[in-house]
Image 1: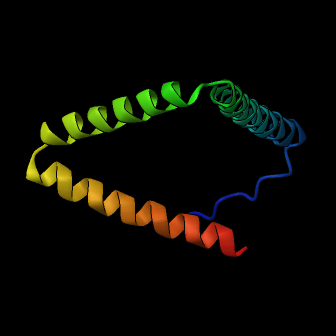
Image 2: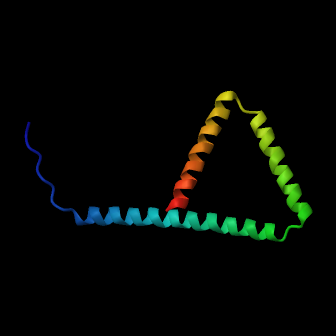
Image 3: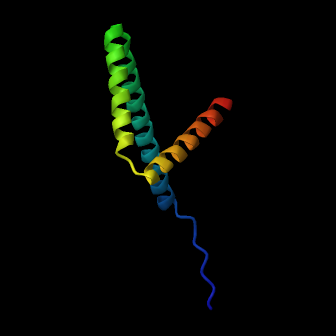
Length: 97
């Protein structure tokens, strides 16, 4: 089997890869910023709610959750429990840092 020729450093390829990584990082930062703005806007809207509106929203959330869980199979329920445990574990790990 013939030996492969060692490639020389390709500056343009390296620059292209760096640009791609930079664009991906910028896109991720933009998505994160949009998510954060969404959280702020939701929190701001909730700050202006009356007690009745808050209670109504919470009860609707509970009913929606119950309805969703009633329509799931045993496998889906087991998967949800597993996902919940993983999410809780990740949250605990992030708080410890």
